Length: 424
Image: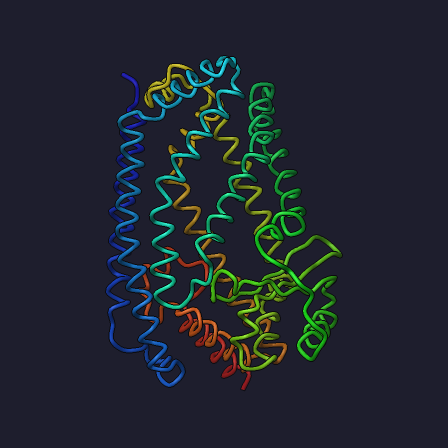
């Protein structure tokens, strides 16, 4: 008797939904707490706390509904074998168009086109409500309906342009890869990720946002001096018009080798009281670079990707696995989809482990900025970002340990203060 792979996958998905819903309930209870955590009393204003609490509760109620609908659809699609039915229909659609349904690349692209249409239809109501009701209600949404749909159309167009060559390449590699398939797939994805990291900020991101050089002035001089003191090869310093879509704020850096760039959201510049707070945030980001966090994260992702492809090569020819999900053929894309579902338990463990490492990196980057003399402005900057983004002030320890890639504000401030005490 064949192992019931499908039932096991669906069963685990439901178990994980129950577990994560339990964590969501714990976090929802934390959102309802009427008072600030003691370390934040006198640091965060009561007005900001009440706004943050209302925003967090709104998002939490919405999250419960969204997650319930998602698990209902995903488990139903698998359990009632909608995927094999849709695969057959996509082949029939090719025949209707006069194309060869036996061509796996054409068949796969037809299948993915249908999946994309289905995803857009099912996701659109939730995305619209999140953007134009919740985000707008709390003063974050700045985009018009026209801008929203224009971005969506651009995203679909990019998928149509970029997707087919990538899909075709993966199918050919799997078909021709032989015993070195895992290496070829990993090598292809490595090259693809490097190419995308190179062209995204230059060709793709400007399609959605406007990037302008940070004007000459004290802020620019301070950031350039900081970068120079750390021997960070800063080539360009941009401001992005994040305010055209949202009042949330952020900053990030990107680039390879001697061609590094830093991007500040215009909202970050507007919200911080003084330049030192912004420079302290940049010092934190440069800490990630100086401490090689970006390199370590990239290497970890590459190792995990290689292991995943190695696992895929072990199961891709399992007829029992495909038949359990309702397929009488073994298409490359379907094999990848099924494999991703079968390793969900490992994915959750890996995600938890990566979050632990990420939080450790955040503490280290904070300590790095503190050693540069930015403890006070970094503290003020973190508080300002927490206030202006209306981030959750009260967090459940189980929920944050499982979900958060960044430590809660209370823990970050405590670490900075503890560092100060040790210094004293």
